[in-house]
Length: 166
Image (cartoon, rainbow, N blue to C red; front, side, top):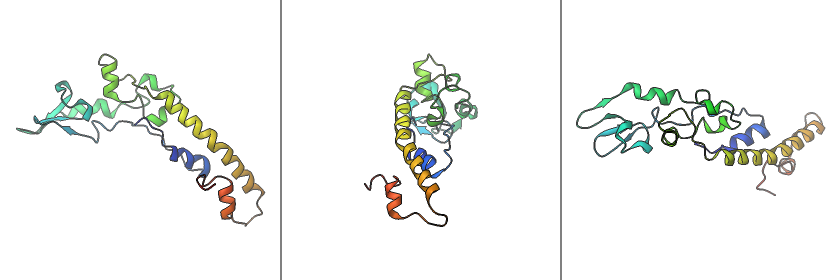
């Protein structure tokens, strides 16, 4: 969850693709369900075995607390106060792991658990420092190319489109 997708950054910088933000970082309670061997249902694999986090049962009969999903579904970069001004919020999805935030902050679900923010920042900055000069060279070479002339394989490898082919 807390790993920036460097291919998305590369595609945005070099190809002009849109960088789609991750606004919902945790799928627990929305698309993930976990079961324990005693018949309980949990919205997150991290909560299995913690009865206060059970959201229903599947044995001996099925029951599900429909309101359980609401706090999960409405937890994102704009609802977690500490995330609003974070410079990497669109990469992590907002606040890190909700259950770890809950446990680390005395049961407050809408707080952050972001031990990797500095590593995310470093990875994004490193990737941008690598890609931006390539993008600028590519743009300059494209501007200097006569109209109608397509780029050659040599030109593409020279400007860094395929950095593994040096």
